[in-house]
Image 1 (cartoon, helix red, strand yellow):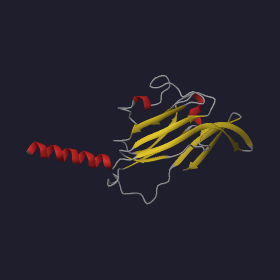
Image 2 (cartoon, helix red, strand yellow):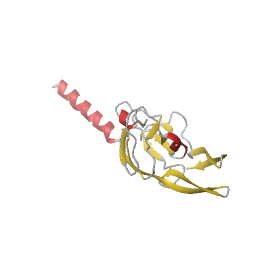
Image 3 (spheres, rainbow, N blue to C red):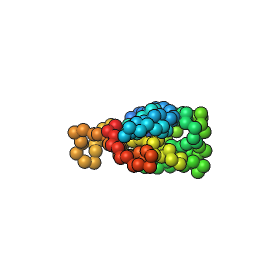
Length: 177
């Protein structure tokens, strides 16, 4: 009888920890877009028509689901920088290592869990020059009810630094997302 009570308690504790986790769904449409910098107009490949791409904002323990629609003329994969893909190596992103590239006009769904991860990370294309424009922040906040390991900030403002090269000229930029 005591073993049955311990088993019931264990199942209850496991269920309560899983109940806090959520599924965060995102759709990334990778396609060409025109940008204007220093009176020059050029086409780049970006996600959802923005540079940097969308911010993934989740809590530790959440499941992340990203549907990638490749509307670009290039093969691509996405790498989730800083996420240890222990049970989901196919979601890691190195082309021809853990997955085949997403072909032009193709789709792929990344599905992974962020248990054991916290902090401000980033995601980026893992395919040739697309790394320069296909990227964005990945913010994993402490699980609800868990304190920061430092005094909680009054405000959080993610800042992304980058460089665009137009006509062989490097143009730095700062983006507040």
